[in-house]
Length: 323
Ligand code: PAF
Image (tube, rainbow, N blue to C red; front, side, top):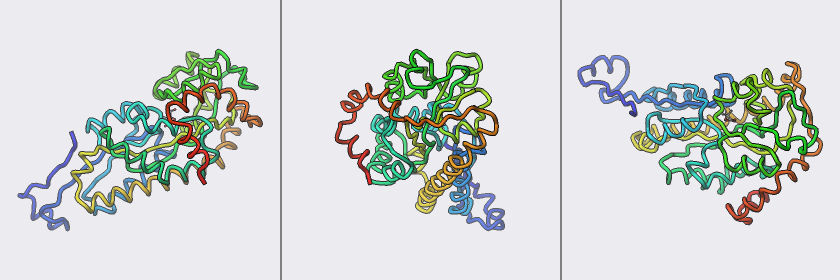
């Protein structure tokens, strides 16, 4: 499936006339991402393409596509029917269980904390763990801190959420936390969310500001509560056989392109977090600061014993205490 189109020996004179060596090959890499082109993931994909194509003198050509079913994207990368994908860790823990720890609610205090952990030993070891599951982790990106939105039903405190159906990612950690808060978590791929909101199959959903903005979720929801209950990491993954098929220069360029994707992605998340809330207010959604985020922390606390037995209290403490 991995497309590598060799320049035929018979075309060597033409290739040389165009400044390419006779042995040059054109490798085509498709990278999908799960948000619109004008978004934190779209910016990451463009930076990835620019640096990879530039760093390989065009011997690797990058095709960017949108695929908003992140589970399908990971399956395709694992199978090799697409080379790379950018997405959240939503479904990743179902492929690489070690990474689930990053999805624990209220684990990170702010962006500096989350980025520090991902860029440090813990995050880099988790990225390396992907190779045990037929995936190559190239770089940690981010989706942002997730906040709750609802349609007509107003939530003034976590108690109001009891019995409500909230769409979650296909992520058991998120589901356990919401269940502890008395919510009926309804997992589905993002591609199914607009119709679920429009048909009232769910009462609300939760996503970071960059996602709400770029997908116009405010058009389908009435209230946005800045709960920031969980940091949602992003990741750039590639197919390991594809990476192994690259030469040394191309592999080095891939690493640089991953770093450029992370930088562009984080810069856009910061911009969306700073300006985006005001934009959303102006567009008309009722934006509510959550003074008492601890009430959400406490509402989800019933899931903590399960998280401690799955990940170990010490590991969770090491992440919480990072500085
Ligand atoms: O809610 C989700 O599924 C994810 O946050 C999304 C929108 C696909 C971006 O990673």
